[in-house]
Length: 296
Ligand code: THU
Image (cartoon, rainbow, N blue to C red; front, side):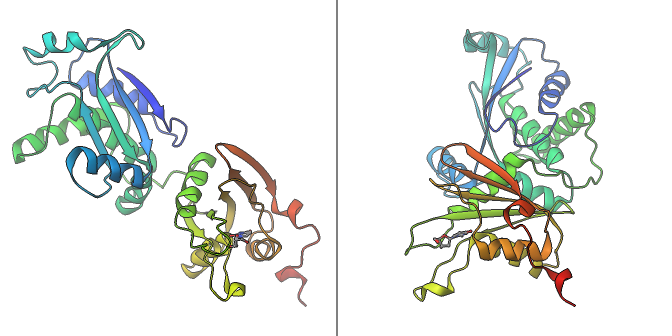
């Protein structure tokens, strides 16, 4: 089955194409079919949920089947309906459109203590089975749907054991920094900054700049993120992504000094504008820095 990515294809390393194929195999679907897939942030998801379901909340996955196949897409009667959904551009029958919140992918992976890859694949399988016409409104339909999802994931080689969280890609770190940036409290400078620091153990901590009417009390996004992590007992870092809206947000001198305290060799990724990025090692941004080892 064709997985047609609309946005977010490179955000997670996950065998999504295989999962789509395995969902179709479990359903014994042989027609050339496809679904659209878009990864969105929680705010976007909240808007979609509000418009289409009247629920003013974000959620993990939403599916919009093009046609309702109450007994599944391969049941009798469905074959005629599906014929009307052929896309000349994609050369497949379109079964529907799936939206997944990438913020939920990470937070639910942490909650269930498995990889972001497993979580994304699970949500995708769930979305695909909705597009096939299945639901989980009754206990028996719920069990049927869960069993099919589990079968498809197993077939794709994604068992249900505990797996370490997947390392976020640079693209995901930047996306998380951007989410934090939208929470910026910067009424004085109107310069929003977001940061997302990645620990050696693969955990992420975000921060944003928080200003104050007494200007000097302002805290930068990078230090917000680092202090959050250190306050949670995490002190080893390997990368930090920093985002701003329209200007390259290289960290200020104070933040370089704070980064140097914990991770003199950290990778600093910056992103701004629509998709501009740059990257440097902290050692290049703060040569001859003064750190813990320089104290007698
Ligand atoms: N800012 C950061 O958050 N990080 C930096 O490295 C540079 C500056 C914030 C602080 C303030 O809220 C605004 O940007 C303008 O200086």
